Amino acid sequence: MRNLLRRWFLENVALKTVALVLAVTLFILVRGEKETERSVKVRLAYVKPDDRVLVTDVPQTVDVWVRGPWTRIKRLDTEDIDPVVLDLTKVGDGDLTIEESAIRLPVGLHVVSIRPSKITVQFEYQKRVPIAPEIVGAPADGYLVRSTVVDPPAVTVRGTKTYIDGLVDLRTLPISVAARRSPFLVRAKLAPVPKGAAADVESVGVTVEVEDEVAQKTLPALPIQLQPPAGVKSALAITSYGVNPPTVEVVLRGSKNAIKQVDDKKVMAIVELHIEDLTPAAARVAPVLVRGTPPGVAIEVHPSEITLAMKPAVAPARQP
Image 1 (cartoon, rainbow, N blue to C red):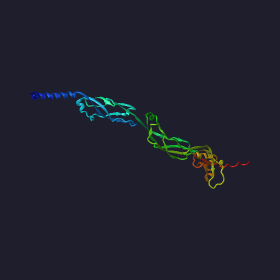
Image 2: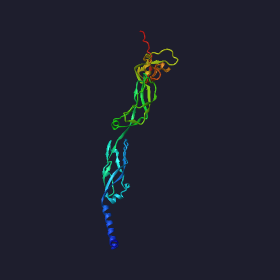
Image 3: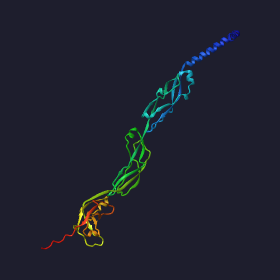
Image 4: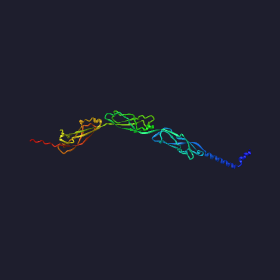
């Protein structure tokens, strides 16, 4: 038996060695070409939109089952696989499918399955909208709200797509201007938003400009009155002069309260006479002055000047 074993191992050693090498080589070749599967982790990269915020937790990798020759599978390094880029700017809330074609593998390998193959995404939408102050009440009589200035003038609001799409502005809680007579600054809270929505600030500064209400009054035909020169005591009859035109239109503008104080009977259109106007002479152009108006009233006169000349004295008729 010992001799038999010696012959098996020692006779034709070269031939047996070649046979062994061929057998091992054939085994390696056959095993290397045999297909097998392996799981590898592939990274995910996300392109996120600017107009909304991703609120769900999304995976950073997925498990990809790869099939191919054993030798290629063994040499596969996850660093050789580029990350899968998922563009979230073009999708809405729901499931996002990872396509097998998005995974680029070395030649000879192909994707069997992806786990998970779908990713659930949900967004919180946002929009920058202006602030609209809610003004209530009425200022004191004769005053009005000229304007409002908000700081900051706009805020960013986040919420569901339905709410954000329909949002035009965001209002404040009511700001009362009752009996106000002057500008004032107030810190106003924003009106509540629906559940699940939020603004980036809770309150804003609002400056409310309260001003006198502007009014106007027109005296369409105010007669011209002549005022004697300084030092002349006697009144001068308007009939002694040629005045053209004899009346003017006076327009009064000011606050509503100031215009209420205007007494039509006290408003006069005055032309001041000069010493040279006391004798017949060539006509001259004289400015029209308005007297009798309360303070704070602006005056316009149409026309602002008249033509003035003293009429020649008429000689008395001779008696026959």
